[in-house]
Amino acid sequence: MNKTAAFLSGVAMAAVAAVTPASAKPINSIGVTLGSLGNPYFVALTQGATAEARKTNPQAHVIALSADYDLNKQFSQIDNFIASGVQLILINAVDPQAILPAIKRAQAAGIVVVAVDVKAAGADATVQTDNVEAGRLSCAFLAKSLGGKGNVAIQNGPQVSAVIDRVTGCKQAFSQAPGIHVVTDDQNGQGSRDGGFSIMQGYLVRYPNLNGVFTINDPQAVGSDLAIRQGHGHDIIVTSVDGAPDFVSALKSGHSAIKASSTQDPYQMGANAVDMAQAIIDGHGQRGQTKLMAPVLVNSDNVGSYRGWTEH
Image (cartoon, rainbow, N blue to C red; front, side, top):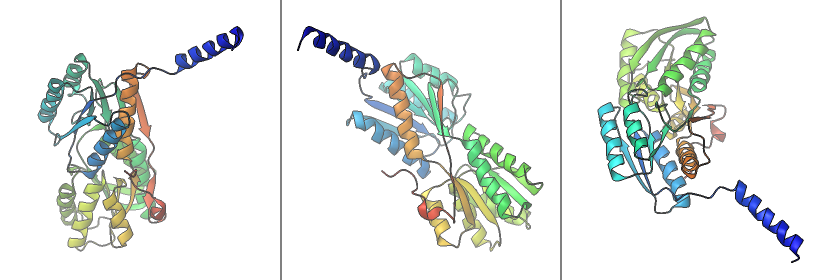
């Protein structure tokens, strides 16, 4: 190789080095604190995070804990993660503002904190579904299915940002249909099947002319569907958010009141969260970024082509 070629080769190698950041040490340990591991959504999110971390470090250790929507329990879990020396915490905040002191303690210990599914004050990054759009899509479908008029209930849930945003989007959709009357929007189904079942039982007694229900997630929708069938409710349409396997099974059965759900992809959400954290750890990720994942409405027209939550 002549001197000119050698020089140019060196310049090219230097240029590649300049645009290809050196990877920091792989993430060895991750602490995950979630609303409830009784919800398959959060199980899939943990699986996605684990798989992504193990692409670069097959020995990566992931500890996933259920906060059960208890703020004090989540505080304790974060403190335990700090004491155990994790490099990354993924948090589904029970309270998006009150969790700030715990996040600051983790960051002071050199731990990157990424909020998943819901916002958390002070988090280094956030990844979540566009929940306003998810609620809007689901409730627009409900309003259209009812011909733009009827009595509907919004079955609420834990007051985290994702739930608040879904209800906001739902109400935006209903505002475009003046014939839709929201009879109730303040019952908390706790994001669970049992909660949805219990609240729907009450609806059937108090609102005998109820035509439709929007639930903030699929577990509540499945519980509501069971209550409707047991209570011999007729012509009540249920829509939701998640696109979970249980929803798909219910829709395909042809016997369910659940007619549509705005999809999420918790597995990919967990993977995205680890990617964002790794970029921050490596020094080329921008802190404070939010990644919104677009929802898609699934109903009987397209459920056959819906591939579900990312395969793993």
